[in-house]
Image (tube, rainbow, N blue to C red; front, side, top):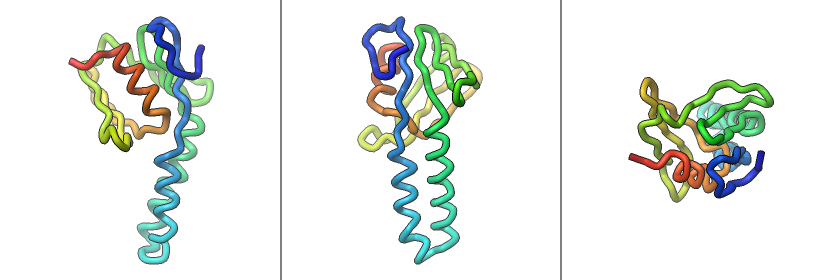
Length: 128
């Protein structure tokens, strides 16, 4: 297993965590606590929750599917052959990853390296 993007489509690539979104939410919640305590508290809690998730959730691109892990436990497997489309919203400041399978739609906050994510997606699941 490699920890960064490798051009070999048969290797497994695990995305490194990115704490950008949680940190921005936590920093934004501080001044909001002074003006709107309830809203600031909610945004701060969301930032803490996403920081925790970024620390324990892992995405691995394998030769045949995208695997979602919580720690060492495999939570879900998404075979590429069932994917119909994918998109990263706001490429300049990527915050949301969307992909559609035959039977379901998934939205994930980008809590992992967005550049490696995009490179793996373009290589393993070219958009239709």
